[in-house]
Length: 471
Ligand code: FCB
Image (tube, rainbow, N blue to C red; front, side, top):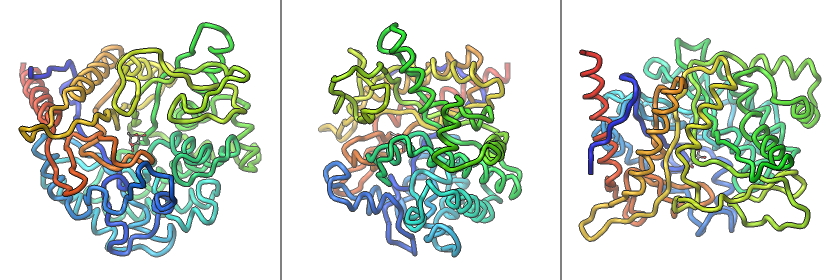
């Protein structure tokens, strides 16, 4: 294996990312409340193989070993999420000190290991009692989120400076609210717009609370992808633009520009949420609060065509877009894929970063808050996991970031999804995204070849940077 060299700025930061539901387990420990994912996962047929999230990687009890893996790899930053139902089991009101203590220990452990903690306050695990009162379709949920953000900041803000509010509001809206592939499985189609708006408002209200609580660096995370029309025909190009507006820009424009991407979308939001023009404008002002950084998650580009009458799109992609939408996702004809079936396209990564820079004149510094791939490699006869495809994937995607930087996008860091194999939502444990392998019977952790490669990449970058800054 050759030592990787990347043309990145000296202070570029390397990290890894995880999320509470996907790794913690211990769902009934120390007063944790029930989340919408516990409810969803308990329903038959929702999760591949009937996998349960009750134990996951048992990170709740094994976090010290997981911190040692991060430390030995040499990461600068660790992005994890805080489980709202652990901290405020009912969603609002009474705080559970034992839940907060877990994150207190985690943060101390990271700092002792020389790693900067970068918590996400919401990675899809809404407390079930809030769902019972309307979840993200209700304005009160946004207000409860701000209250919870304050509780966490008051506890950890003396040691944590970097905060991410919500993870991928676009994916949470699409999979969990427009469709029923993720919790809370509402299947609302376009009537899901309030879920987008109230998550955005939750973000804005939380930024306000965090600013009042301390001198923090605050960001938010979106999953973004280039949307490629299936042909040059006007109808396909228009369908691709509409899809991009609904999935990328409906979530990023309000934050970075202070408005929805089109009048029709603003009207749909106001109509479905029952908001007057004045209320909508007041909310947008809160949502557009200035940020210190913006988190981009990237996995793959999406190919879209105008929906053809009578054509059956079911099962073409992982997600079935409702038949009343004017667009449909279609697969890229050939080219490499991960074991999850996702298209591998580092140039798509460069594209979307360039698009973000062009679209947003005041784009704050970007951090790649997730990038990675599922490959199913298992330990070989020598006990090692030779996941060379993941190494190639990471190599080409970090290169894509370096190219985007050369093109003027201010990217400050790159976090691999994920630190260790984990519970991949509806896909359960079959999909392995980790740099560290987890044996699902014994929960034993084994560092994959990609982990060693990443460690060498980080070390090489440090050496190169110190010689550059000394020169
Ligand atoms: C993203 C999620 C993350 C992980 C990756 C593979 O959409 O934010 O939790 O599951 O996909």
